[in-house]
Image (cartoon, rainbow, N blue to C red; front, side):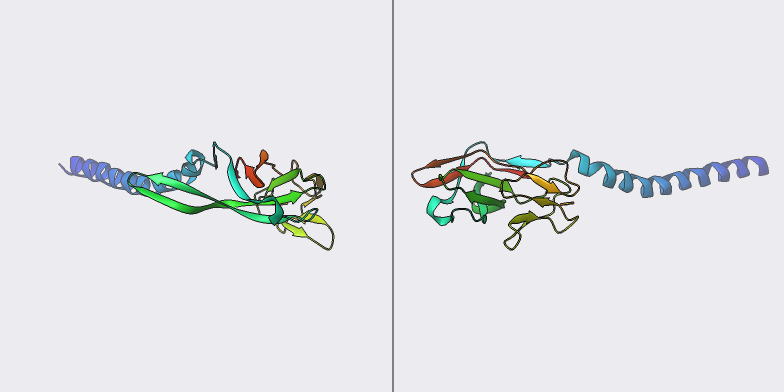
Length: 162
Ligand code: FES
């Protein structure tokens, strides 16, 4: 009798310990796996207008905010901010449009007017005005976007790199 009671308590304590351990471990596993299942790149299938050509000075990078509309069930959300891009209008009116996110770990890059280069504040990544990597740990040049000009409007196919 004593032996079976001891056996029961042993099984019960193991079951309780296992349940408590699962309660701690399951959320940690979910925390680790969840980011892997998230969509990390999103964008637009169509071109989006980001401004008039004349809004962008020749040879000086200028940041533009990307907004779009989203239809969700019965609602239409206008002016949703999707991100930003750097726009460089060249002498011949052609364009370079780059992601504001560094291709290393995604920090926001800034234009350093004094040094005429894009600078990443996180790990000192440096890129020239054409988006080419100059120095730092980034594995590639800046991400660029497909662009076109229609009726003096700049249009881009936007993708967010996060
Ligand atoms: S995130 Fe830009 S250099 Fe690391």
